[in-house]
Amino acid sequence: MTAITTPSTNRKVIILAVAGALGGFLFGFDSSVINGAVNAVQKEFALSGALTGFAVACALLGAAAGAFFGGRFADRFGRIPMMVVGGVVFLLSSIGSGLAFGVVDLIVWRVVGGLGIGLASVVAPAYIAEISPRHMRGRLGSLQQLAITLGIFTALLSDAMFAGAADGASEPLWFGLEAWRWMFLAGAVPAVVYGAVAFLLPESPRFLVLKDREADARAVFIRLWPAGDVDREIRDMKDSITDDARSQKSGSLRGKTFGLKPIVWVGIILSVFQQFVGINVIFYYSTTLWQAVGFKEENSLTISVITSVTNILVTLVAIALVDRIGRRPILLAGSIGMTVSLAAMALAFSQSLTVAGELSLPGAWSPIALIAANVFVISFGASWGPVVWVLLGEIFPNSIRAKALGLAAAAQWIANFLITVSFPPMAELSLTITYAMYALFAGLSFWFVLAKVPETNGMSLEQADTLLPPKNAARNAGKEARKAEKIPV
Image 1 (cartoon, rainbow, N blue to C red):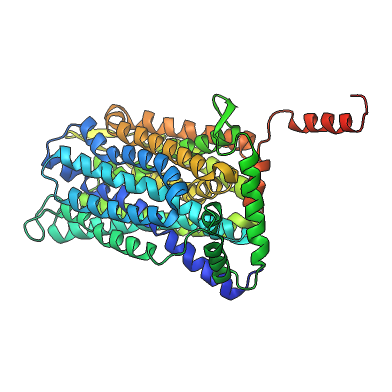
Image 2 (image 1 turned 180 degrees about the horizontal axis):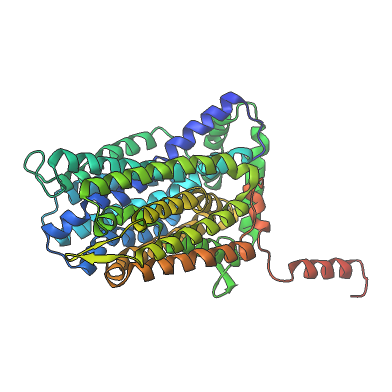
């Protein structure tokens, strides 16, 4: 967008972006709150390692469905209604999971919560990108990941507080309910706040123009950019929508590269790599992981909270840099840091010993594993965490943005599910092999970014149509121009 902005205008946009990013907070909270409850749930329902992994990961199946259909529903009904639906779904999931009487209904309610996570993962970045002026869009888009990290921190902190108050996650706390149940029930509070805030937000002006609600779009523009050229903004949007409608492939994700447009594949693969490095193993299983190598439950919870704080701080660094040095350099640096730290974790766990039936890391290997895990979180949190969400909000053309974002987010959740559900059995087999595999994917992510990911820093959303043009497009355009001038080719 090219509207003139003032400090007052910037404040209004920032407030709306922060409010929109509350979905990311719920996303982080709901996906990570099970961290402190894993062992208690496994004990409560006598679960095997594989079933425990599925109980943790099942929310991600719901998230994949929510992300896939969320883009379509957001295009049809609007961004704000989908935010409200997300809040209601989160609320139901929190209450249902906290009062679960068996593993089956726990899984059902976790899947319901996953639907809300999927909706939030699509609607929040799209909404933030569509209300933000281009010079602020990277930083405001990064608020989604910052909100996710705050949600993760809040979930892990509340887990530690409930477990501490009850002297263990499996112990009864209030009204005869175990502490792990209160961990889930706590999610009802941010769910209600999110749903209430969504009612106060204006609809995306791009969606309003798309639905021929020009007067409503004009009112939003006047509110956000009172010093801007509202007529020009609406005219540009109309022209863009008209061009999309005239295009034969308008709104279609189909292309010649394995059935999809190349830019859609870039978004999908970015999403898959973001998960295949194993970041959510840290946030879903860290308490269990550190207990497995000799730390007590309370110490493991404390380590998890410290890791989540680190994640927040480095996300702030990414927000400060993303519009200054660009998206690609940050991703490349992050890939290097993740590869090295994950390889160090694999090496550390290769030195583990079994003492009295329990795993432990001897000598200096325990602090090495802790340091490597936090370096990994720093490398991810300062790069692939926030920047992938920024790119997913930017790289797709207007005509397919919501649908493509939904497909990419669905791919992300499926990848997340595969990593999450496979970790318990893989950890039982070998933590060394597990982290070596994550290190391999981190290394591959470097080469993918280097070869395929476009730089979007400073581009308007309309300019996304120029990213990854068809093969030989420039040559063909030149031929057409020469033909028009009757110059032999």
